[in-house]
Image (cartoon, rainbow, N blue to C red; front, side, top):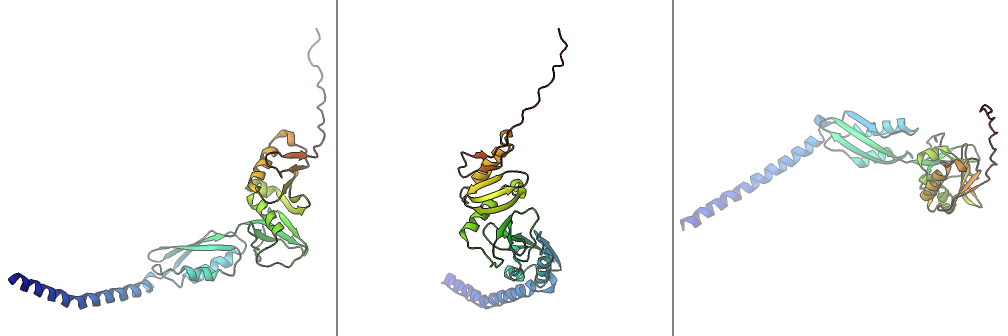
Length: 258
């Protein structure tokens, strides 16, 4: 009987504590909400990394401005993404806070693989997926893809053009930088190398294997003088237009007689 009485008293005490605990939780929650948006943790130092494109100064300024409206306890990635939505060079944005006042924002850029060259003289970088980076200056070493019409949307839809871009996207960096122009011909996609032969890819299928085959053949002395490499069957590369090899002149006999 005494035990049951004691248990009842303890139960009543616990019930009396429940409202107190609820009040403390509410106060703690309110305190957290106050602190996370407080000037005590306001972002006042912003580092933006990953920016290399020609519109980088504008991208950096937009992100810094957006970040300074945040705290290190309340980072809003959606606000950062919206701040740079208008810049074609930006593919994605991520952020890392460093309590109490520092924020690092990393930009992942779109990677151009060629420059569209409409008849009006412009060079507009474009990604391997056909995203047109209008407003971004194309690097000089990007191969040109000539277009008859200057009218361009935000993304290319033409299958043949996308096949050509798939070839450029698969290129090893050294060979991409040696590529002068990507054209669409009756033979399919053809890449003209600076100081080298034309590379005939046909379709954009198996592009990486074709580039590997091209690199292997280009490294062989026997391919010197070829005007084109037919890569349409990667396992059987044909080198065409080989210039005739001029035989070296006979060396005089310098050994003494007798």
